[in-house]
Image 1 (cartoon, rainbow, N blue to C red):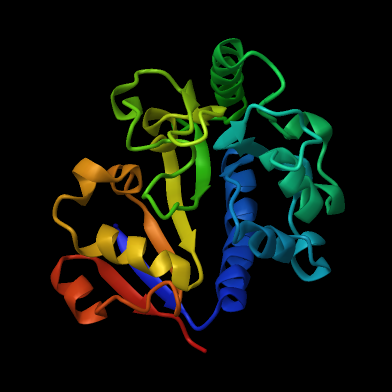
Image 2 (image 1 turned 30 degrees about the vertical axis):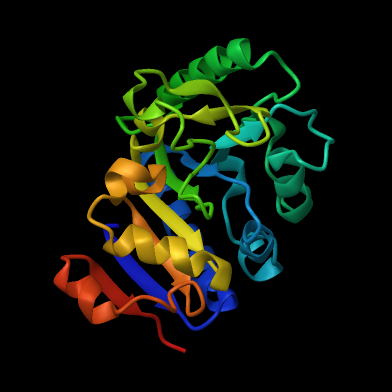
Length: 254
């Protein structure tokens, strides 16, 4: 964890991300012509993405210059209820005026090996549009599972050593194939933000923040970024201890 910011509730957390999205989008478009973000699926994401779709934010974001990528995808058709693409469409993409060519979907219906190569190529080709930029992305959003996985990077995989941008992987329990960005791709971003809400995330957040061996055990600890938490997800944290461990911490205003 680079830093920890605790919000009174998930609504305040989503509001801050929407405010920051607008600010960063305008700045990035002025600097290099595009604002390139990576989104991930997850149980708390509908509220987060839904906030961006509200007129207060939606109507002021330069969507014509925003490019949306996906951190991972299940190997299912885009209209399947398990599809991250379908979830994000239902909460954000269906409500904004973004050119279709700016939505860089992982094609979960395709062969995962071939699709991982295709998507990596799409990421590399996009860098050409980012005038003068060396980072692939401006902002990556990540969640965290109770087992410490992020995107579809699981502890049972060996993706932290991958020299590719995307890989085929499998869920360790269900065996379901997935396509995921690798740590190499995700780390090539100007900003990485984890967001976790609710009491069921409190245990893994505590382990990631305090366990010295976390980086050897949990993929979410191997990709450092800032953490946005609501009070419930942060309920087990001693913020004084977090500060002593060298992590910047902030209590967001009510």
